[in-house]
Length: 523
Image (cartoon, rainbow, N blue to C red; front, side, top):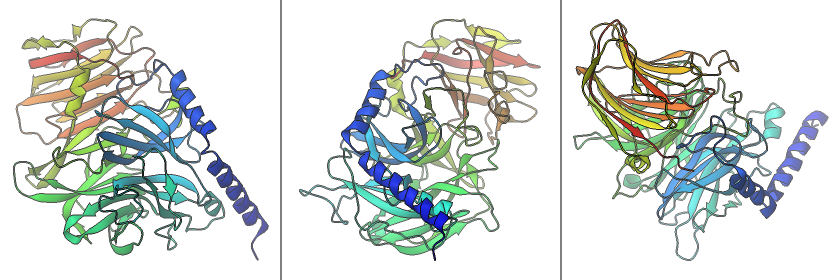
């Protein structure tokens, strides 16, 4: 006989789900619209050229797909609080990867559960049969999370489902046969990413299964067959948000397969981060050396990074986006109306290395639309902390600087404000590594892990240090040495940083070239 407590938990879940289904009414969509209209995007710590929700909680990017001139960004969203809760899919679109338009919530929780992370594709051949009027449907593939089952202690409370849209993502219908992949009895069974594999004429789904990924195939997005799995023997870390895709090796005719995977602990600088493996894929099995796991970002604030589907071949780029936070402190950061932002969109590139291949990421070229008049820095040698941008009202910058690599000491840049708070980005000759130090960059009392100096590993043979830096009101993104080392960190100063200085400690900072480029806000 079913335990009464389990029955009541199940009943509560059903009641919530029915309420959530009703919440697809226009009143809830009006609520989202009103929040968007009310925000000024000038609140303390509000990103000025990164995507953030108008209000309330956001985490992983989901369902990123390009369709008819629009880049769709869906995301994990809880519209009733600034901390994690019953997950929905929020929705925004962009026509240039820079400026974003908020749309009503796309997917709401239902009788099968919350709407966890996933992906979206255009079913160009209408293999699913869900398209109308001879138009290919947009298909969302996501994890249903049955909260009643989780609370009851079962293991099969996550499973993969789909929804479809025939009006360019503006409205959605959940497939009547959900789930399309039932749970075989595995507690963590989520985050599907789907691509079309032309050689086998099959859809490929990769998703996380606790400490590994599993791969399924399908001819139609509805009927799925298990194919294989990939993991690290003995690993005990939780894997999330995988993404499997081909990428041509720059400067060659060779193509390799990249498996992005986000890890819930033991990242290079603590907490969560996105890593990757490089290997080969035959339509069923991904083969790679599991000992060669690398990191896509050495900062603490790029998680769940995944790529857009259906980018036109005429573009040819592999475009990615990550959640700009860390589960160590994401629910505690000192923002009031909203929580979290996304990283800048990035293009991914694969390069040969002495021991294999490495993934590089660079900010997308479209960001140049935000640039104001540039100031060119003349070559100069600095022997102490020296101001190169005096305090002004400008607080949004792109900086492109090249230093001669020092044999001793530390060189870098300091960003500061009138309150005496500052953030340092440096290269230390003794460590032969890059660092972002946010220990004095503002509030850090909300979590013991936040105030820290983060290290970025490099294997760079040049005699020059080449940095491309984007500074927003509460974040910095460092693209070093043409994307070989990337670091993303958030921070929370009393006021935005409006002064820039060159750091020279125990050495001479020899600036070879530089540009200071003020940026416009996007809202």
